[in-house]
Length: 199
Ligand SMILES: [Zn+2]
Image 1 (cartoon, protein in one colour):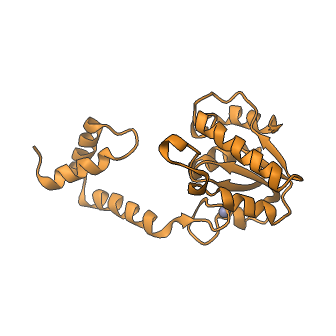
Image 2 (cartoon, protein in one colour):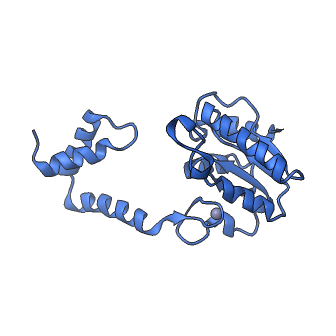
Image 3 (cartoon, helix red, strand yellow):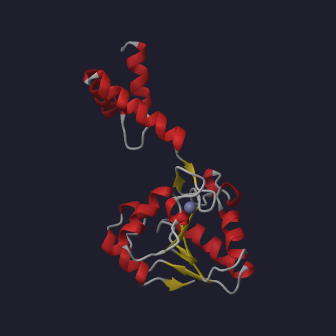
């Protein structure tokens, strides 16, 4: 129906989350209408982000160096670690201003049906960080979904065995069930943070 380069662009846009076939077509036609400068700026931005952004060697958050800005920030409280599923979950927690500790990004949630087992996430790396000492509390801020809850329970069980002196907490309920942290408003998320409970 379209010339192969146009079809290729539509196919690529269609792989983006929340983008259906019609939206993919609209985006492709938008790029075709755009100036060479704007279209190249988009292509360059995608290329550069893949080239320059990697994962922090400590917390696995996105970073443009070996360590992310939060891990490098000496004013952060290194005795408390907030565990989230995805790098995108760090931003909403930061926006609440309720948390001044460090993060640990798992890279997903446990879901045996989808073949996501503990070794597919950065769970062992979390245990190593906690075992290294100096950690007083681990806040489990995985999403209030079935997989997020299962992940929180798994980590809490393991931490109780491996590091019994460390307090393990979970965000207070009040977050919309089944929703992603990413979409929680900052007041609700802030309250969930300050009202977190021991697991
Ligand atoms: Zn980091």
